[in-house]
Length: 386
Image 1 (cartoon, rainbow, N blue to C red):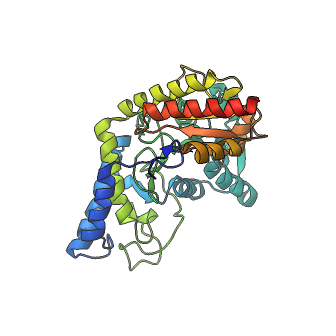
Image 2: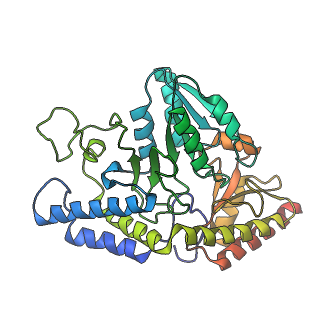
Image 3: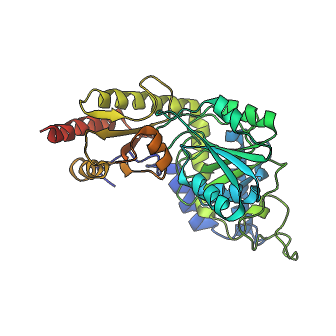
């Protein structure tokens, strides 16, 4: 939207690289056929773009076999496939108290319906957990640990590599929610001992909405979340065993995946290190500006500490939804307010009573926009101070 300063990157990145939109239009015009459902030229080209996207995504995440990546509608879809496809009745699962509802709700569903035991590792008010608390939580029936690599409320970065080492020593699988880190933080599934990785296509990977995926370790066989046509082993009664078909029933979002491919290629070209450094610099600038305003509190890691580009804050006793409304209507600044689908994280941060305003930075955020947000918050705070 013309003139809008967009600080809702944690929900969905915007704008997208021009190549993303160009690839989607080219697909619509030239080869938007059904991949894997025919041998004609258009279907073959559609299949090729899906495989190319898998290859590029595998390269980004250090995945050896691209077919160990199954496409999904979003991170929520991927997490549900991983959790409901792996966890069995009587299992014990460990997660943290700063997980998104996309982790918490499937786990609580299994606790209510399949007698699954669940332990939440507590965090401090900045979203950090103690690894000794994790080590103490393991039980004889623990089968899975689920963590996000970065909190969607506080931007806290989890020590995924160390958590992976602990899980490997315990013989327990690790599922990582990369909703706020894919394309922004380095991820190598082998060196970090990640067994399953759920990621969005429409956030840090700069692709369109309706895209995402799940990496599944080759030694893991999940019960498919969906059953149906795959274009392979059609004579069989049951879902195919071959990957990625086993987890991709139905027609895939070929147009969206063509766009995702260009988003991933953009990230590979720019490098996650460059992307994170740029976002971190602007995040520190925003935090410093907000912390210089009387009555403004900022959640999560302190100034100078490593985090992703998420800056959640409150202004005195102002309602977070009202602040977001004023920013939108009076200043043309888009942020998100409320509880951000993570009430336990708000409990840890001490903001459960009123939620928070969340401003999130992306690769295309400008320094001018950061300054404009700081100035707007100053003006709003002045009105509340009267």
